[in-house]
Image (cartoon, rainbow over all chains, first blue to last red; front, side, top):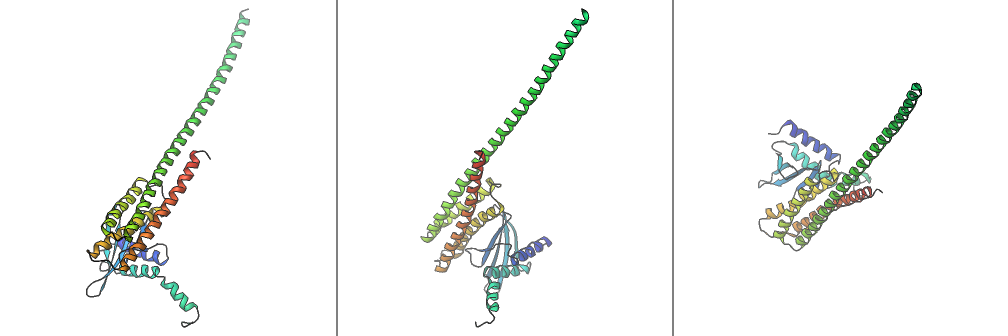
Length: 109
Length: 175
């Protein structure tokens, strides 16, 4: 059960990611991104596909000693999937690609 | 006669008062000088101590940086058990450094050091997820890329620590 503080954190991360204030990095684990905040909190966001092909999303926050402090899934909070999509969009530079296509005046040019 | 003696005694007292006043002022000046010297010595000792701690951090970071390179070599050689063992050691070293030297790196560099440990740990997680199955070339490529990025973060922290060490060294030398 997500608390109002959890919502505050995830919404903050979504906003900061959209504004490119947080530097997310893809890890060696497939479909996982990580960042460190305040020099001590590591946040990882994951996506996996279950056997029924429905994607699952979750986010974890660990402290500097590697202890898990918080774990949220998209079933706890829908914004977790929004966060993952936002991170992926920024990491893949989707907006820049769209600007490049649209900004040239014609899709075929 | 009695009046002359009294006047002489008063003059002598005035003279001693002057001498006493001068001596007190001189004593006060000497005390101030001693205080200033003691403060300066304490500042120098503190600067030397900070410099020694910074030097230790630099040495520790150099050691960790070397271990990161070793992990890279082991990934290329596909020595997965050794990779896991080295990564566990390296990530522990990163965490110890952040605990031992919490004020010697900027928040940005601490973020990088933590990120480096997280990135390497993700290699261990990925190896464990493979459950002994042979890793495909795409996975190996991802491991190598992750290790290179993690190594870059450690180099950034090392660069900052060296800069800080040089600055502290300059201050200790009074430059």
